[in-house]
Image (cartoon, rainbow, N blue to C red; front, side, top):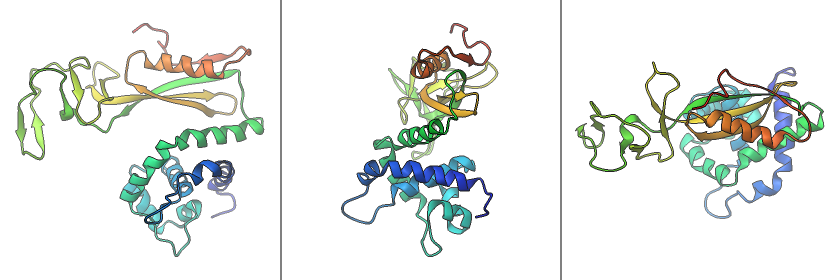
Length: 248
């Protein structure tokens, strides 16, 4: 890894944060059966996936087979074999159960605070639509008969022609929390959630995140919750998208 490569300082920040999480990480290791994937390495691999915008876990672990830069970052030696993407998906549930993502996020923010990089005065808030892992055909009526189906038995295709679907009348059978949502009248509604980020303006740091159901008022509600958690007695300023204060 080149001496000036940006992954070097990121790796050091991760090392410090993960060391502070030793007590929690020790609880996640499997105590019987086959040797488990170290949760520290799972977190490092997820960090790479975010930083390099790798679209899938299959592509991520294809990179880990031969990319020496990625292997060094995750602490895999030349002799170590990368894990299978399906094993990673299974073991990732442990990270969610122990809420390790938010814990790691908080530890990195603490490092920024100790270095004097965080400001409590000026913020920006923004939201984005996150597509759910559910298809349009998974939406079925909450009450009454299901729409007529075509196609094969293993891969049926629902016929929604002439049927008006709303979040009040239909629900996804594969993801009960996903809601139909569109960001404009010209675009079709998709099963989605909404992600929200609170940025600190002075150092351009993300200081809080939220994931909410996809609703018209979700952005400003999440923004208020995040700002209330950060605001103390200091007067703060906030920058947001146009029409943030527009009633739904």
